[in-house]
Amino acid sequence: MTEASTQAHPASSVPARCLYLYGIVDGMIPPGLLAGAARGAPLEMTEAGRIAAVHTELDTAEFAAIEPDVREGSPLAELARRHDEVVTALALAGPVLPARFGTLLADRAVLSRLLEDGQVGLAQALDRVRGHAEWRLTIECESSDDSGAESAEATSGSAYLLARRDERARTVQRRSQLRTAMESLDNILASFADETTHLRLGGSGASARRAYLVPESSQQSFLTAADEVAAELSRAGCTVRLVGPLPAYSFADIELGSPAP
Amino acid sequence: MTQPATNVSQIGGIARRPGGGESLADVLERVLDKGIVIVGDIGISVLDIDLLTLRIRLLIASAATAQEMGIDWWAHDPFYNSVARRDADENKELRERVEELERRLAE
Image (cartoon, rainbow over all chains, first blue to last red; front, side, top):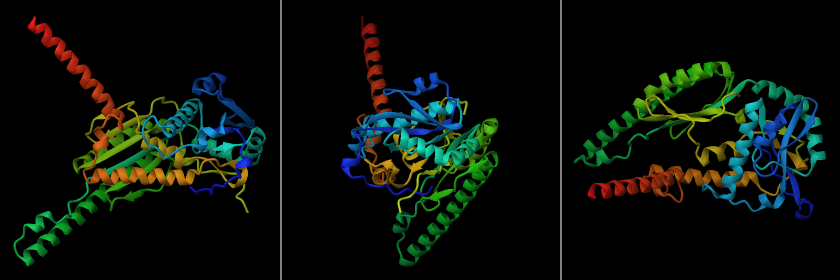
């Protein structure tokens, strides 16, 4: 996703109340669902053609004081979970393009202008995720022991060097095996998906992450295949984690508005 | 999307936890890093999301690195971890039940 540069507004231009954007949906969301998704301030919709933005009004100051406190129960945790709950509730009724956490707009006039300008692309994006859910795969494998502890027991210099060489060879072999097993799992899961994000490898090849956009009709097959193929990685000491079905966060890489000149 | 519950499954011979809750780190990563963004000066920036995201990533990465080094006290500390908190509550409840049963046996 292209990261947007955040524009700092002069304090005097920041309104006391603003709109918090949760996401973009089809125009006809049942009002009962909006009421069900709301906790605290009621959810509202602003429509433009066949799309609509779901938002709520809040005190701007509620966001201004957020600290990067990642403990459960912190203001950040509460707001992030509320954002996710609303987006997830909207996804139950139909396609949704989630907005990034903390997306604030001054008023409905500004929001309407954004929707009018971007409605063709947003409608196409909604069609892409319609009838799909996101599944996120995370693989974490135990790090290979390349610490040299065994080598330290070698009594002579040459024995030490030989032991280190053998350890490195085992590490390379193990990483290669893990990489092959990860790619095998990924290839199979990707075959059930209509879109995927890039495969992100980390931890010197000992971890991998990817998101899949899976049609509802394929989800059971997707999960069954995941279970079968992941067994090999599990035996190799890896933890395979699959989270879903989620709203299509990873497939809503859309920028609204015009970059500042 | 018709399935209501988010499943967090550890698969491949490891126990499934259908309907299990997600960690805060998972939720934060998702909502801070993905989705529609407003560019230019049309949005209100009372919060520097990019900076917040970076700081949270550093915090989470630090936690992961510490865990790799075997430093994971917060994973078992009820103050910092909801699972540990739940386990602590369950332990307390079980201890009370055992005491109650022992009392009855002694009578």
